[in-house]
Amino acid sequence: MDLRKRVHVFRNREETSAFLRRRWSEISAESVSRKGFFAVALSGGKTPVPFYTSMAETRIDLPWERTHLFLADERFLPLDHPDSNCRLLKQTLLKMRPLPPENVHPVPVETTGLRASARRYERDLSRFFKVSPGPFPCFDLILLGIGEDGHTASLFPGSAALTERRHLAAPVVLDPVRHHRITLTLPVINHADNVLFLVTGENKAGVVRKVVCREDLSLPASRVRPESGNLDFTLDEDAGSQLTRQECGAS
Ligand code: 6PG
Image (cartoon, rainbow, N blue to C red; front, side, top):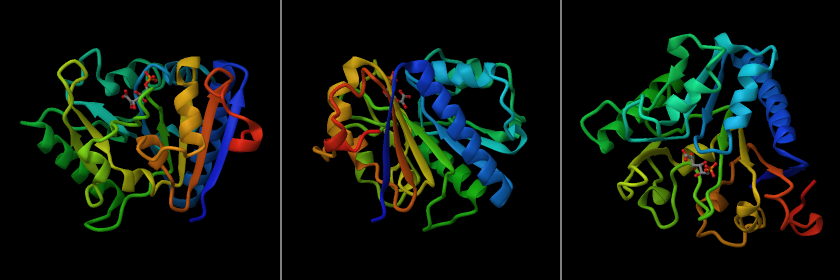
């Protein structure tokens, strides 16, 4: 396996956002010139909010008309619910730069059930990427976070979705407080050209060390290993505080 893993530790959150904007710009330009569009899957949570907001506010020239936005995971809630990831993106990244409506691909949560929603999202993905069935779609970029328990997207430790090998999207049943979810599966994530983790804050230092050093494969984030794509960890100093250069190859 040709795993191109890089670890970037920045002084603060602003610097992590600036780095991600540069990477987004490079990857989108390259994707559009190679095949005419840029497909990106984004995560929710609190960590990426400053980055999404900075993307909306910064005057960088990006191929928005050719950008297609998907969700790495979504809560099974109406799209206008305060905890919806799609709503989060509309209020941050897309606030000042609305994309053509057909370029935004929310998880179809307005269905009769969680499983049906996952199947419909899978169908939307297959149609967009023109894969059916068998091969996995190749996202140009997937942006992921890491929870303190090592989950990423909505792949939680011990969850059945972690073992999914065939489907592109999977339903995830959680307790009512955390809401049920729909998540991209590991084969899709590991098929991407670029996977970027963004993790900030001291409370994540321990889990970041385990994931970056791959000590513990029971942590879903440790199972993210793009087959032939790039894997980048974008950290602030707090999240990277338990890494040593030698041990983890941090830059
Ligand atoms: C979500 C995510 C999830 C998130 C982590 C980290 O929608 O919640 O996709 O995987 O990235 O839970 O969340 P924080 O950034 O809030 O710590």
